[in-house]
Image (cartoon, rainbow, N blue to C red; front, side):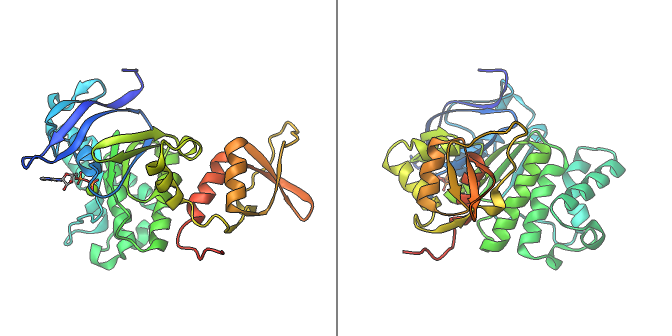
Length: 324
Ligand code: ADP
Ligand code: MG
């Protein structure tokens, strides 16, 4: 095991009482600060994998290590305080205010009340919930998206080292969902928590993940960065999943919002793309180039790098009417 890995699955199998092998000889190392997405069809073992990390489920065989120590050797309450957990339907306490809901776990950790309150308000601001407006509201006075936002920051309020998220946005409408994904990207940038995020939506995976782990029938089919999966899908199963995430191939995308300035050193891009470009062209060019120039009306307006191109593809690939 390398020093940097915070969670490690060593040959982990989970077989339920009725004989179902939900997870089958899983090996996976998750690095500190990494945002890893587990993706795969319903029933492939994602939730079981996640719940073995915070000991809601015990493996049948194999070991799960956190910072090199078997999860079983930690005090289970302490382990869970140090692991934020967000579910599809977060359960906020209905009779408590938003602020008190966020402070539940930190209070159990017995941190200084004022410090925790400040942190709760900071987190609320990070996700666009003005504390002056929302701190004293009850959950019933929030929209579904806002409630889920509170669930996410509640999981982060105690400053856990690890966040587990099990399809946290899948019950939301597409607009709220996209907003929450943006929030999460911002939180990721700010706090850089080690996160294990479960979804069956490739768009979401491509948008959020540092690394994606594709699962099928309790096994890992492929693990890699969004870029690696796109360029080198391990067979038809992964290719099909990726394809679903990409939307229509002939959709015209607008690169203007995604363009950044060239670095200080003047560079001559090897390739220049039009600001309005077909999805398939963008995919094939970005598979071969780290970055490309972008021109609009005959003028070079900046560059787009591979990462932002793929984020663009992930965010545009959903719910659109496909041309052709
Ligand atoms: P996912 O989250 O990917 O949809 P799960 O981890 O929930 O998958 O489930 C994996 C497999 O284990 C499925 O076949 C599911 O039916 C089965 N399973 C999950 N929980 C139990 C349980 N408590 N008892 C028996 N089988 C279960
Ligand atoms: Mg599940």
